[in-house]
Image 1: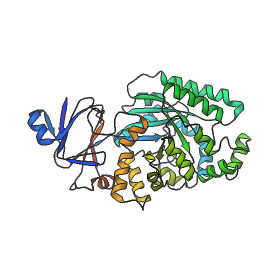
Image 2: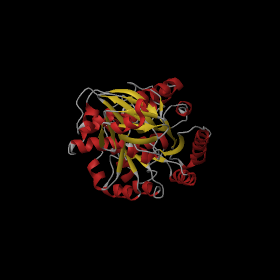
Image 3: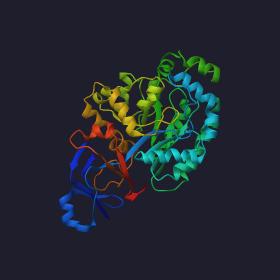
Image 4: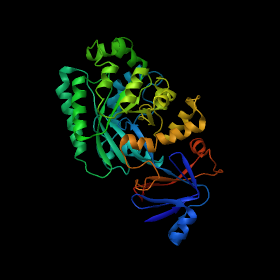
Length: 403
């Protein structure tokens, strides 16, 4: 058992000044510093002025297999970016071995990320993810819209999923990712979701990221039409958006991007108790627009933040993601938005990913950061922690110091 006394604890949108925590693997107690000093005496570790304890950050959506990208891919619009991914993916994947993926994981840890949802397209990141110090929700991705290839595509997906299920360690959760409504045939979706329900696996999917996807799903036209004609000889979308969302009625899902969603689709997402993953930097770099968080609030839809991968970002840093989000949603009250963003990378992300962390609360895992700030702490700390330079002095996962 350990006791640390901080200047401030910030958790669940609340500032607890002159408070400390008692913890082992989990949080045992949160109490005023004077009370903990009187009870535990010399066992207490005084963190001192400017010390802030926050929950460890949770990156709900990251692609690690493309971590070799720096300037290879084309940014600005979705279709040129996608074409560059298809043309250069083999080179990028071959350039990113286990050490490359491990460096990306270590960079997340240095940025205070104590848990992440990894979208694995090929299974090449399995060993680094299984050996990561963080909690990992490992989403094996299913993709393929050609019904003639359904059996082979599903067999490949199963092989990768089963391989991840053979990896045994606490905090590693084999899960299922459905790539998107335009890229996965309904037969494959229904089979994968049936298995996920039976095994109670976590599920995620990309949804309505670009205007090209919107037009293709709605009318089988637009920039995706020649793409599918040339690559797959398809003239019709694999699903409509309505059909796609209908498959997920019985399983709470994390849908990523959702920038182009309609009111009806948002209502379906709300009714299904789904979560949206907001990736503001990726959306900007690929020219996809901005998620309307005001509409989400009105419909009581939970959103969480993710970095996406280095194929569409310059860093795996949730502080940077929150900063960008703070500026691209100008109609939201600043302090309210800052608190919502903090929840999106801590408590709300933990709930969406079914993890026992994301909050400094008794019985939850002791996943937290000790930060140091060099400015006065006041009620606007949630804003300042995002905008001002900061130092992460220590990172704890399940009570063990890992950084």
